Image (cartoon, rainbow, N blue to C red; front, side):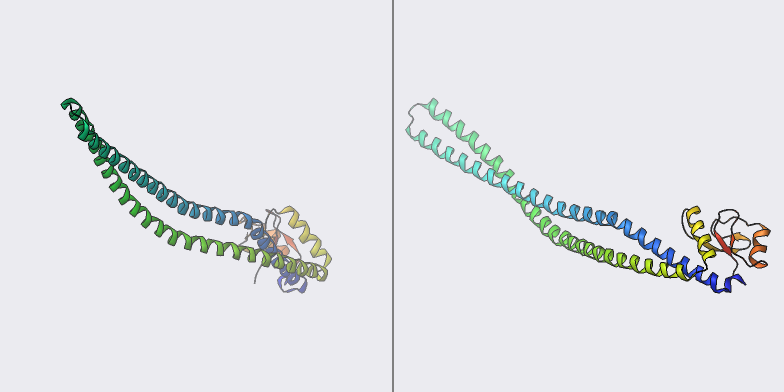
Length: 238
């Protein structure tokens, strides 16, 4: 039976190594995309922390500005009260009183806003603390993933080299006729597998029914046979 022939067993071994090499090469080719995704996630995490830091600084600046404004108004109130002590006309005194009243109203409004802002500052500090803890942990985890991807890249390159040597060795040990036919199939079929079993008279590569002649070629003539639908090398396991 063809499946049990050493030449065909060598073909299956070569095919297995070919498929592994293609899989490894695909993973290696996709690594830059995976690495870019991880880097983008790191940037997002860092931007979240930076955003929380900016929010806190803006609130602290606003609270300080309001504090300075309140202090300035207090100074003006004190100045206007001093003037009141020196004026002699009732009209001037009342005008200063009205101005002092307006300044105090401004100061009260600013004090309310400052208090609200200081409460927001406390909330922002809590948010930043959480962000720096949670997101910093995520950044560390993602950076570890990047290091693992770099290591994986080296391992994949080594594996590709090893499989290349194994494939070369397999090719040298194979029946030249089998090897030529197999290489031709690889050029015709766009993607693996290139060697597949026939199950229920269907090629397991394209899932289409093969002709009786194909089955006869495999079982009776016991020769290397191609699917008459997709061109893959086919065999029967029994």
